[in-house]
Length: 370
Image (cartoon, rainbow, N blue to C red):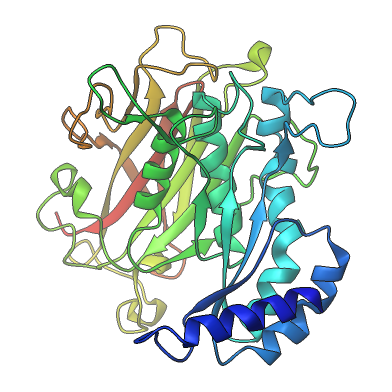
């Protein structure tokens, strides 16, 4: 009741502002924790009562914490704490009921504040390549349940800030988390939907070294056009993007990952006609497929999740950038594909790729007529 009264006072003040828009323009709730049962219990009534003014519902999320609060000692977050599935998939399961409640009321759900560890993050964890790899897995899991935006908390300083200030020349500096956010934005660019993968363990405390996520995009990423033939868009405007994360942790298990990807080709075609009703094809009509991958990694000869500097994404780096633009040539490395099957409904395109330890890659797959 106290929160709703306060919210109503804000509404009154906002409506007194000349030109303040009517209708569904406000982000509501902005709760700092899902564990406040009084907030959680009132959320359905709150969303219903103020639905005409709300555009979205917001909550905060941090899978780990360095907040002392009532504790005797300040807690310490380990890399293991951050990279286990409880800090990615586990968080999405915790927030899924709130997301579905918002969607049921026609509202968007966003994480208005999130990051690796509350109270500024953990030095040598939140400010490392490991945090970038975590953010990819975390963002994918949240997107799958319907979260439509994540605001990673930061500031001019702090271990978990994606951008800090300032370098000796006065420029802002991109931190490892920034690379993860950059890469994820390209994974989901355009109109996409998630594909099911069969590689994730159910144990949320698992120290699973790898994570796999895949989307189908109905518009192709022009960033990687140079890696494909000019005819790669004639059969289909869609492309499959597969995110593979090799966490490189624990250290005694760190190794390069050689993995195969198999995708049913029917996801590239949107109509029954395009699939030829599942009919067989001749050598003249058989579609071909091309693939390439873009990697996020450290340039360290012995890469580690604890690396903080000399990172690159697709051959580009933000190191020493004053303008905010990356330097280097963006590269999507071509890889071979193989097609097996005799009909459009049974055909599968396969490719293989090596993902270095403590790195991640997006594999792009397109149909081609070449």
